[in-house]
Image (cartoon, rainbow, N blue to C red; front, side, top):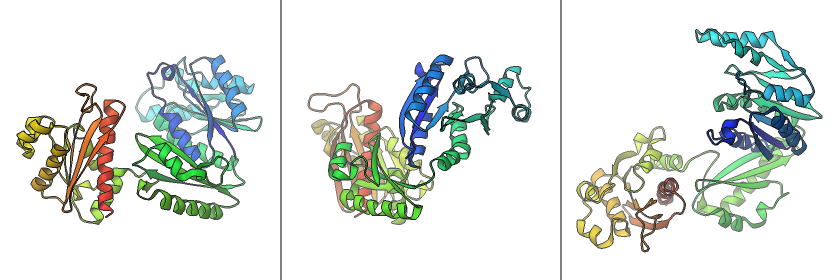
Length: 411
């Protein structure tokens, strides 16, 4: 199995001014073809440091992906560092200059003289096409492949998909790799690992990897075989085993979101939903309506952030709020019931909680959230407690509401 390393270049990344989304994207794409990223390095705009990172990366892996430093300014020095590492000189390519000039002409702008540097690549290397002015660079050294791509995420993603990925797949040939992703919600990483037991052992084929992002757990089933058909059968067998082991914890595949799955189920069953939100401030409504075609099933949404709004807009009894507090099982249920009645929908969700950072008490700490989901079968209300910051608490509350609704739709 071939292995990869990512080198991210740029002072802006080291200083925290720019978030390195390229590395995360590339890691996921490489995993999908069975080429795991075994290490990554982030370096500033310094030739010596970049050359050193290239050496470390080539010692770690068979494929080295580099992002950043291909622009026309003085601090864009990846091409110079690459030439030094390869022991070659930068070589001018007139056809590259013509492409750069054409891009500027298409924008009805003169090409600055400094952009001419982008027409130079290390001797013996291959230029990779780009939608921007900076061509990528592909080179080979001691049986290792090196790919330098722009730091602009849109350009890096397209160059990787169109030019780099096919080269890596050819390089990693010999065995077929099939990858399938299963999306899970409703249990922690350690709980899922415990349920799966030996299925997550290293060295197993298929290999099952686990990644976590904002409460969503993604299981990657990676099968390697002599041909794709055999690898596919191996993945299918493990998928069935995971489905039977984890049951309702698995909500989808590939990059499906909870909102997408809930929307599909509502549309298929010709059901409708309304929401009444307090602590989530409209986030649940946003997640639902981010899905194209959501007008089929999403009808009404209320953001009743204050007690008065809960009373005047939804008819939550003032005495109930006074007795139990706005953050309570009773109020969440009342919000859900009122929203369903006013909207005339099949389902309605009520959410109330304390997102923080202030407002918590010993009895009702920050992170406490109540979620009610009302339907013709009655109202199910769940008490939840989420750790971390305000953004995370609100997101987890909205996701959990979607998951409760998903499970009700599976009945």
